[in-house]
Image 1 (cartoon, rainbow, N blue to C red):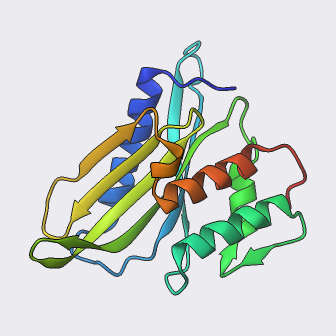
Image 2: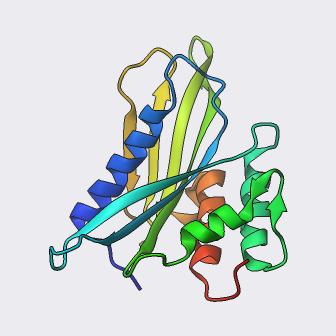
Length: 182
């Protein structure tokens, strides 16, 4: 079991903010993306680790919960190569330990959504994530805002988490499980 340090959770949050910033703010047609947050030892620095983010495009024409569920299922089935337009081999290569000490510390998803506000529906960009310690992360930016809101929940209540967080937790569990990969 991994226990993430304070610095690592901050680095993870920084990468989620960067994932939000990577989507052009004026363009609300950016397809959703699966985010893998990994860390690895910094060469020659002893125990210091550096986080990195892998961004995998997801289809925009499918419901996000279905896509996450299908990708999770594909990870547990070594024969599925492509699901709903997602190349599972890209995901499995990213999950493979290609450098010594590489580890998956969280998964997330960036997507555009609608938010019910007092003045009607507003466009909103969301980045939802979970980490290996069970924390949930939310980065939200309403259309026209320059600064996103960030929420990290160290102790989420299972019946009170968003559907994306539950789907991401299942995907993270599947990604960390030992077993055959394509």
